[in-house]
Length: 468
Ligand SMILES: *Cc1c(COP(=O)(O)O)cnc(C)c1O
Image 1 (cartoon, rainbow, N blue to C red):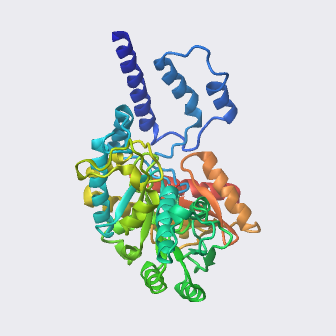
Image 2: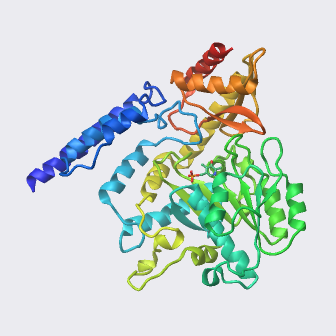
Image 3: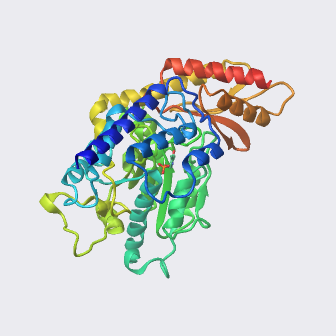
């Protein structure tokens, strides 16, 4: 036993040492991974061992083998997609989640996780300015949060016309209309597919140049039909950061008797800043919301939050019972009744730690700082010859297009992105927006500072010169 305990300690020490070494390398290591997939396979692959290796050795091999394939997305100059890093308190809490190995499905399997879910739910509703009696489910990300919100929507709008979707399914059900913005995130469509609603009949409501749903169009579409209806709006377009006109959309949806779901994966966090709250005005009028903690709140993967204004619909859509589940001890809820999963890790604990370590002001500062850095970067990009910023930078996202004399701007932009990635000072991705290739910059990491923006701008300028 002593030998095993020693081995456990040495193994965890090795992991902690490797974790710290990685974190300390973040400011200087190339952001893009250095190795090839063949190299990774060579180190990590091969046949399954007949006899296992010692745990310490396993960790050492993992660290050595995985290193060439690690992306420094936890670092200050990773601007791809919308990822976010990890706050120290959240990371440390996440280690404990694994060490404690709690099953967060039932109160009896982890009173700590159950109570903290209730605590964090009320903190989040307060912080984001959402109805205090909304129900909350802790899921893996926004895709599952949207799935949860839309499952509640499906329950509610069909119930209003006398259809029990949980009992009878969708065979023979009254048709449901689903309206999404022209630039709705693909995960909204994935959620609709998984809910059996399909995507073929989804109505795409036209958007303006920033990607915001046009409310006149929405009203027109709503008025053109009847029956159970769900509207999916967006707070934070993945490319432009633009927020749909939520107050108007909520008004139109309410008049039409439609359920309004908001995909606020990152944009919902503007609500936590007194200065930026105006961007999401009316957000509290929706029926359900989906957001991520692993993006702007900077907790480790995977962590999303489903919020529903009508707890009865939420519960009806997710709830599962079995005789051996002990229900509702001490007035505390069983977390699994609010999510699509049964057994879950206690992923709420890092969310608790992040919120506790930042406080209300710290969350607002984090969001405001990222937006200010994005605004600064956009302004300085605009000042460079050959650089065009395509979006109004109201949040943390920048869309950039590059031009060189006599060359096709799509090709130039692609080449600049590739050169920036190759140089490794920062990492940016690309997209095609309304037929134009663009570089995407997303600033949502607590580590990112002015110096990182300065260095990244120099890298982008160098890349454009190299390509021109
Ligand atoms: C990231 C994102 C999603 C998907 O979130 P996951 O956490 O990856 O499931 C959905 N919508 C928007 C707007 C996003 O930015």
